Length: 290
Image (tube, rainbow, N blue to C red):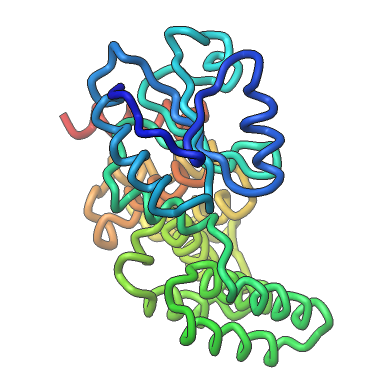
């Protein structure tokens, strides 16, 4: 890694100061830990991007570099098995993990989700109103705040979640679809869109017995398979859900414009790259593609 410019927003971690630099500081604001090695080329390319952002954000997050060649145990403690790896800490815990090289645009989108904004006070007030039963007032407050601060993705995402909790998933989906393209590509937005999609497929009155009977009657009928797999996903039965979507891919990869593949990707996002089911079914998809 090139010799960094002196900056109060960029620090180096060691076994002696990791808790203070990362865990304690993350109680005050976001701390991004850059796990790197001078032996890994992408780490060298990654650092200038991180250095630029740390200085550009000027203290809204702290960048902490951890040399894994010198502090292997610290990397192992947090499950770092590949480099570069970036872990974002808030309130003492990891809230985001990024593997591999990240360009400036991707990093800005990730960090923006955790940077405090003035409109967050409006968001907090709207949530309190919602909890007090003032549903429409809360939704109007969030809608107005979104217009005033379109950069705060937390506003429409929160509004969509509240709509879902009120049994209005179609409105929530329309809201997410109206977001700017850059925000629609956000991982959290994609995940929420996929979850709402499952809700819409299952409907208000799930009929798992009927769907199972339809599958037994016609093994090639993908619609009941998709409905049943979506229900499993909503019930957190992820193994059954993934198998159901994977079965559809084997029967008809193009079913409903590739809906089964997209559903699997949604589940990958929900569970994270290191979950055993994600590892298993990602490998299956790769085999299918070859």
